[in-house]
Length: 137
Image (tube, rainbow, N blue to C red):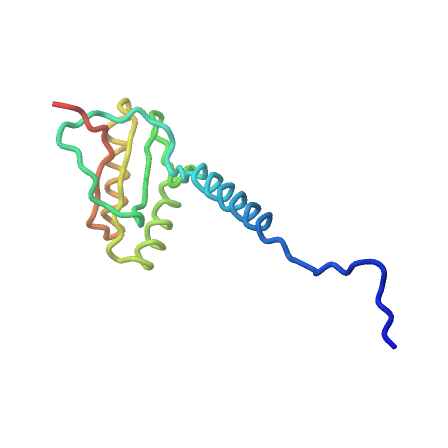
């Protein structure tokens, strides 16, 4: 003899609509956070203007900045000329065709910029550019 329960049995269900809402919220939050993460590799300097400026290099570009006082910065870190030589030799071993972009404040002395250019050339790097601000003709 089979006795049934007076309490009606409920079927177990997994509600996926709240799970979908949570997944969309997490996706939107991840997208907003990843968009706000910008990688800044340079020190703020007032660049000199140039009319014929164009961007030629990709993401493997090494940025070197010379500030007003003649200090050398590589990827927001101050370095000495000897340390710059080491960085350049290490990076050229990884990529022999390494492009380098040298930036300087508009008030940076010419001799400081030439000194950095000389170090870059001694490291055997052929792809060298200078950072400028594009100016409308």
